[in-house]
Length: 428
Image (cartoon, rainbow, N blue to C red; front, side):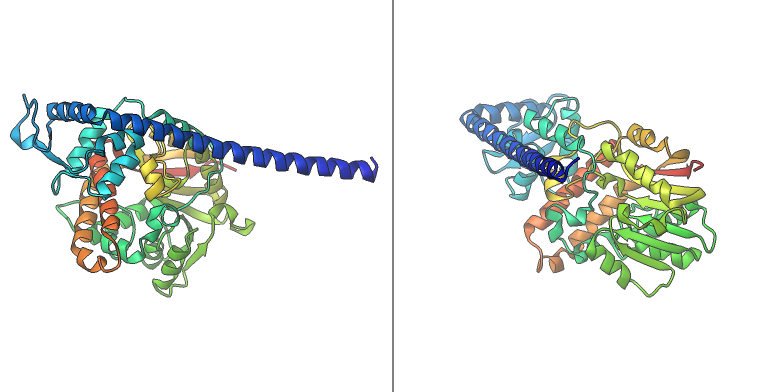
């Protein structure tokens, strides 16, 4: 083939790629504009129907033990101690929630458009989850959810690097999570209510699952601030490599203490060099699966983890798991304010993704520890708020509190579990 023909083909390919890229970009923005226009028109219609909608919602809420602004339309067969009093300050609250879904629910709470008294938010959300179970969400939300969940190679990002939560510093998390600065719920046994003690028990539990012996090489995927990595190195005499793609987490993890047995790497674990392949006796991942972007990425995640392990190695995974598949896999409020790629998996999705590279050796449910853990986090933040309020706004406080209440409601209702899987790598 002559040089002139090759050059023409190269130019043609470049033009084709350029056109396809721009066409996909234009299509994406047209889709976003169409969704926004649709929802704006819908909101204008809802505003016209606002008063009858508010009356219908108020009447239906009364049947389920929720009194809105003192209007108890029908409270038959409901005990007085089960009644929740909801104060709605803005008449657009309910139509905003209808129009915007979970973002509307969260943002109206953040703006103080509604309140239900201290300690009742959890019960409100649990009632909402039960009442809306089986209902189809807004068609526009279903469309964007369908596109996002099926997109492969979603950036595997930590919550600290995406969403509104980037404005929270380590001081906020240390106040809520204690010295460990770790989202490990821990083990609350024998009447223990102390978070630090429970988290240390949780670390010991994970170490037992890893079956460690001195001198082993351990890789932690998504090591966060390094609490677990340093604990394993200090107490079990193993060499730990922690990987995180958050610069702040990596810096803080390195500052913890001078431990030659701990190596902290700031990187996407998929980009680790070949020299890290097949050299580790154990791999552990604690609450990172929720940030993989959805089921399309689970098989690739376990395939990558298997490559790091020696023959006969173990992989321990701890993850929140939903009782059943939610209507929307990527909750819009979570995506906007907490973690852009946050999807809590279903158990069968995890098991399906595991089977090609690992054997499932054991499966434990630590869900009973979630309620005391999230309650302790809320208590710690409330105690520290007078000091934190000098740096953070009321909006920060209310969004953090809202997320905790939702997690408490899911945990109390046994809709979300905390599973620990022990996996042995298949022969290579």
